[in-house]
Length: 186
Image (cartoon, rainbow, N blue to C red; front, top):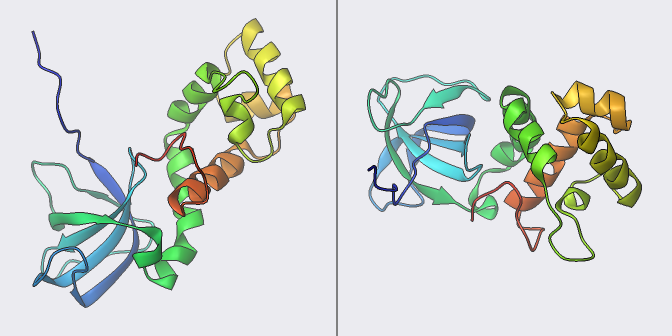
């Protein structure tokens, strides 16, 4: 029998910003190429230490898993939104949307399985653009059959740009504007 893993680590992260001669804000005395990135799975902001002479592009997906890293030496720690550079903050929306689009099935599954949070509030309503009307339509449509992808959702429910709406919610969670998180691990 497999034991449940106590901690799950990110495998991939997307570059938000990097400084070629930077100092870590999370680990004293660590300096070098400091990368600010967003974890693909948990959607948390991470500070990474890159291997010397590595080059990065904003929005690039880098491997940060345990074995066989090619560009990243170590994951230094987690950062709060307020701690990241203004350029990292301005890249956040595009990177989050990229993650939503590249992991579309995960978000479609979420929409297909979202449940009420309280008798008055459904998890779907916490996503920008989805009010009571869209929520009722979504619930009725997913009863008939599950959504296959975001295009299917858009066609059947009429919700404009669902990936952008989900991305908007994730950003609200990252920036700490929400009391409850649907997607971002605290």
